[in-house]
Length: 461
Image (cartoon, rainbow, N blue to C red; front, side, top):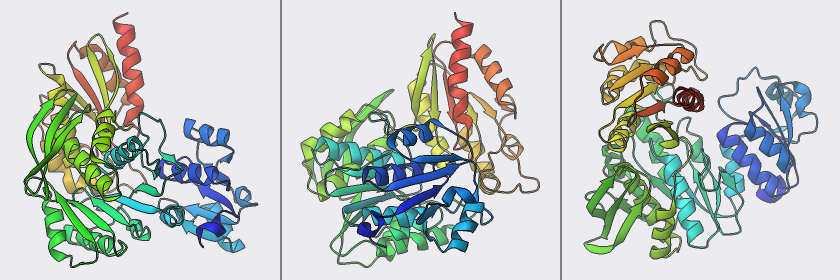
């Protein structure tokens, strides 16, 4: 199916409220496509899509697809889903989420942002930078940009920026003009048994870049260095960034709420990159966005202005509020490297205050594989509360729980507490002015942030 054909179809989404699915649906609605979809429960995201004109069903039933000509689903949808079964029986065209997005991207200069960590932030940065350059890109991101409050948009420009998730290999559908690979580590161990299997899927991803296109690669990551050693493509431009990259840095300055770095290309100083969000990793992410923006013709000064104006993405070290000097930060980090970077950033943000983290491990397989690494990373905090594992779509694994992590942390600073209510009540009482409380994980731990803030308001009223 091509884009012109899709524009004439009625499209139904299973799991419409998901971050990726809702963004694709939003773009389709903007194109005038008749969109419907279902989800297990209602949400503000679904309400927003209703306002735009989507037909929304709560609950999954075969009758929901009665008017559909195309069905879109993700790998998280069970084969026993009644809508998926009904679509197969009716002979309705079935597309994966990635395939649907690839069709929407097909008429544009597509840039796919991939990597184990930093995809959402880097995609958001590139989008805002290109907007600052007046290019009005289309975009589809796994999280909402703080400034616009949305995760997707149909732009008037010729560039389409998309977050490319390697977790199930579906990013091979995109076939972009350009790509960013921020870093590569072992993750998604339910799909990838070892780092070698991750490298192989990234090799295929690089092979899918269109001739005449480009790759921007972060070579401070050993995984990316190994990947580049395996690539032999003379028909695309390959740009590296990092300490020894084509684009390197000097004069780095990190503050509690921002940072700056001098960007150098092959020994020539290009300019000063300034951010108003914290973390050395974000200076790296911004450099990747800067290089990709230059590749599609944006001007360096305008890109710098856009990056300086970038205020973050939802659930990426997101400041949810401060009460009596106690700040609540929410972050999506769910891999040991992400946990470490988030807590290092929180430590700088807190200054002389304490860092208190509520961590919710994500998936049994990841917890089993990385329990020791999680323990080491979490130990950067002063006080650690561990919720039980958020299963996502996984079945429990015998003997695997959050206790695997607590066993490897100093017992004086960690507490296993599966009750979210009790965690909130305890932290609401022990937190002091100057402390930073971090809700951390890819599950529903973020729901605790507003409750914490309300409890703190009541305490100090």
